Amino acid sequence: MTNSYAYEDVEVLRYPRYFNTPNQEALCKKVAALEKTEAGLIFASGMAAVSTVLLAFLDKDDHVVVQKTIYGGAYNFIVEEFPKFGIEFDFTDGFSEEDFTSKIKENTKVIYVETPSNPLMKITDLEMISRIAKENKLVSMIDNTFASPINQTPIDFGIDVMIHSATKYLGGHSDISAGAVAASEEHIKKIWNVGKNLGGNLSEYTVWLLERSMKTLAIRVKSHNRNAKKVAKWLEKNDLVAKVYYPGLKTHPNYKLAKKQMKGFTGMLSFELFENVDSSKFLKALRLIKPSMSLAGVESTILAPSKTSHALLGEEERIKQGIAEGLLRLSVGIEDRKDIISDLKQAFEKSCV
Ligand code: PLP
Image 1 (tube, rainbow, N blue to C red):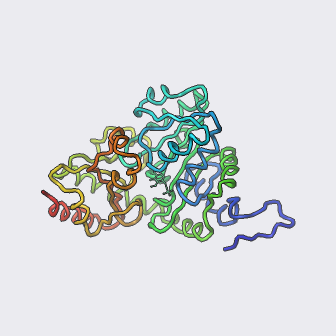
Image 2: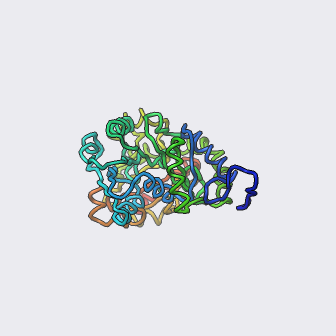
Image 3: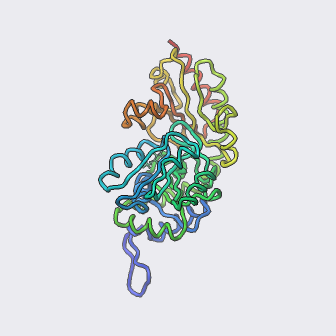
């Protein structure tokens, strides 16, 4: 590891904040290969990636159409920071073609989606988004964190820019913070230019850790997929569970669409408990599944979005987005699924009121 590279007689000036150390370049190529794009970039966090990408394509007086219900941090970034830059934005009222097209204005430059979305696992039609973007000359962007490139490669449907919180599935061991972007050579050049000014590059040590983690990405994600499907089916049959949100369930309103654009349905699911279950008692009673802010690690974790990831949205906005107080988001790990289910079972038994 080093941050110093000889520059005499070389064409490339290498420096960590220029995203071009040999380790960064090797990792960027991996991300691009996974997302089937020409190029990639690695960042210090998912939010460094989200913010850099959006600022790279939006100038003062430009406008962006953003999908309703996206990750709370991305929502806050847009709502709190864009007014300072003079960037306009509109969130859609829903997920239909009309919901997106009705928000497009003369100065719209970008359309931004997240699918499956955090925390309600809503599915947005990627082919539709790409068509809307092309018809209106917009750059289409997706936060592909929840799916991971193993389950979903949005470029297959014509999406321009793929963003990841690599803190999640790409890292996968709940021990690093990182972000990643994949796009065409031309788009990546634009993102790079803003990125080197904002300084959200990943440290060399973490570049190494992330590259090492990604060697097992496919095998981990397939295991997450299998376990989550079983857990979702088990939860769906449980009398104490009011609703299960998992795109791999036939009862999910977008099951067919999810099947069309995803190769697997991820390890992420959410569920709502009936009122006769005390959700904080339930969380405390879990022994294997740990309450945690993060997700997509090899170990199963759980959180209440209304009190954590989406707390900053405020109650009114959460209600608007359909995030109930009793909603729990479960990140199903790769443990033996019988252990996961028996942990849920014993916690249910202890939390019935
Ligand atoms: N996108 C999604 C879907 C997320 O869930 C998160 C974090 O939870 C982020 C982006 C932000 O990533 P980070 O925490 O690595 O900045």
